[in-house]
Image (tube, rainbow, N blue to C red):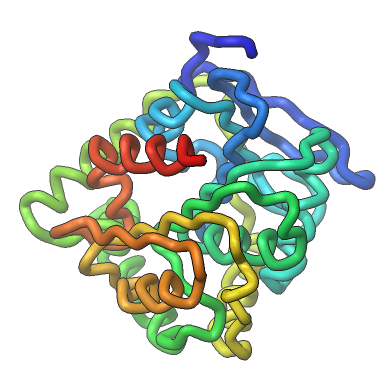
Length: 282
């Protein structure tokens, strides 16, 4: 097992060919045999991962983060459903030569992680699902209005919409948002491409379809699962996270206080040890 001192700030971006499509990814960490594959949120690229979470988990584990099909620096176009997003992620993992991985899916990435576990159960050892819920869980009709309002506020204040979507508008939440965006700016070179309009539209279609689909039988996901969310998530109500955890036979749930959709970012000093302890379980 090898060790690297590279951090998320300076780790190089790599590419791999997956059935004719070039996938962009970054990897760092301890070189453990089972890597932790990160699956990011709606409209996110590699540079939207919180360095404190990446580096914190990479201190104990081999971490791989990638842009799925059509996102950021990865080629092709975004598929309009989470099933294909899951299949694309499986193809990427297999192209790197792994037969067993841990998954960390945040928001939309949590939905993709569930698709991976349902389509390729033998591939998944453990899974962290943060700020996410089950397919067909309800509440999807509110997402458009919530997101649109956040973007109006962001435009009016010359800020990022995630200020309003990820963090509560309390003193604590505003400080957490400021710290989060400062951390995202730490990487100054070899940054990823911004997400395209086509990719945004494709992801939104996939989320809407998932929200109106029939629920999956999550009882067949027998791998250990750690479900995390904030207690005031505007995008995925924490009750949906709790419902998802109840439907998985080997899941545990933690709700972080006074936080929203980005609760794991706001509480990264607590979440990282929680995640590392979970991944270290037998």
